Image 1 (cartoon, helix red, strand yellow):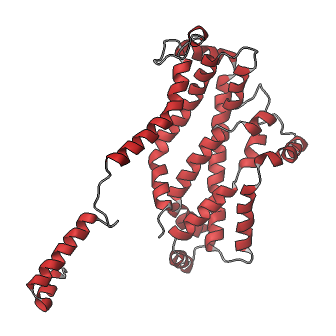
Image 2 (cartoon, rainbow, N blue to C red):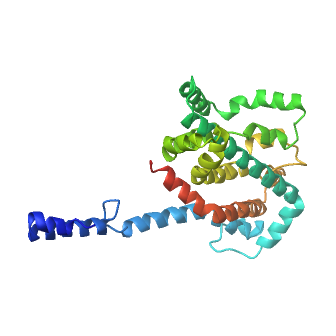
Image 3 (cartoon, rainbow, N blue to C red):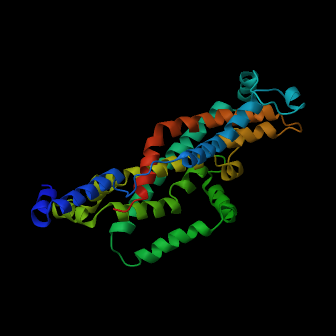
Length: 304
């Protein structure tokens, strides 16, 4: 029921008209309290950021579409017609399809594992009350301050003791869960999932595992989608640890592309053509999961 007629009865028609104008202004402004549309500067800044993000990919395609003789005379401004020939040389020079399958397997398994275990740990830290939970979460977050390079030697020793050097298990197992994933899911679930909802499910007789599966996991889906996409991209482009622990005959894509630079003469047109080929699957994943990524970022930034 509108409050405008009641205002007219109690305070007069002038007050009612003023209240109506205030309501119209609030409706025009919307829930955010502002009715201003993005201006030229906003769109110009976003366009510049977009062009700056696309420039490395265009540069790689530009160089990869020419041959070394053209590049020796300078960098052209327009793409050439040698990209397919350079791409074919990439496929012949390195075990590209083996590396592509390895990268897909490692990235997919790692992304799924990080999302599952991070959501499970985040649910426990956010909604379960147990002794020392705050200090344990602080310890998990503090591990992010330790550089990855410091753990390479002991990690390599452990992998060699298990006999996993040269195997994809040596890349997958250490990345099954991340401290950032636990921190991100803890913060999201703490704000997005009300305690009363969990209590209601528990009163109905559900166990805590069922409460997590049927209530916590669906509530955390936007943040989990963002975490999965970022983890997939980070694992796909990871070079340091796979280069150390994997054999050249069974590499991931970044390690395989490094083999193109093993000779004394580096043909940058071939190298960057391979870089473009390795980026295409990431672009497809981003296009497919982009909507979930934006939803996860926006909902993760808003409390409640």
